[in-house]
Amino acid sequence: MINNIQTQNTFTGKSAFQKNIKQVKGIFFSEFADVRKPASYSNLPKQKQLELLDEIRETNMLLRVIRELQHTAYEEGGIFEVFRRLIGMLSTFKVGNCAELAETGKTICKMNKIKNCDIFTLHAKSSDGCIRALDHTIVAFKVPKSKDNTITKRKGIIFEPFSNTQILDFYMNGFSGNVRQARKIYAAFGLKPDEKLLFKTENTYEPDINTIEKLRKEFPNLIFNK
Image 1 (cartoon, helix red, strand yellow):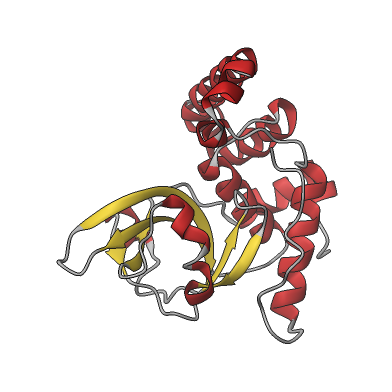
Image 2: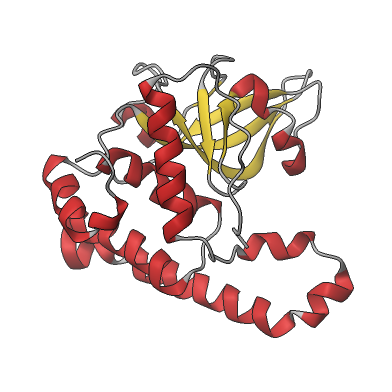
């Protein structure tokens, strides 16, 4: 479960950006403090998994329901409904994996006027050039627009981010830091010391200005930047 906030701030200094990220984390973990992460159960000892078998089954079932409802959101209510369901279902069902947490966190950032942020899935590139997925999704900031735009999102471009690119990871208890600092964190997902950490753009919906304003009114408890 997400039950604590990572208190160590790996950013240096006290810029407005860093303060905003701290506030986003505070709001996120206040609102979604008891979210269960289905993927995390696989890291438990086998005996513990058996003890929690009913809980695991229920959590996986809820995640399937959430994703089925999210899949039809655009057709049933347009772009606003996509994000209204995203936030509403995480708040109601308290279940989500890295993709749900990252997308919700990114949306909260945009609701609070933090620009140039998006979600990316992580990949690893070995010394022989082989690329494999790490099965994890994060939020990153200020990725060059030549990399982060509609065309590249549709194509699912895989690229190596700059080492100082800032990451915010809600699945990993709110880790915040740059790509270089994040390498140790992502060893938990199989990243090896001699591998490069890569980002892949994901073809997800983006909230427009009108949608953002509607979300701000719908979820005022998620707003700190009035």
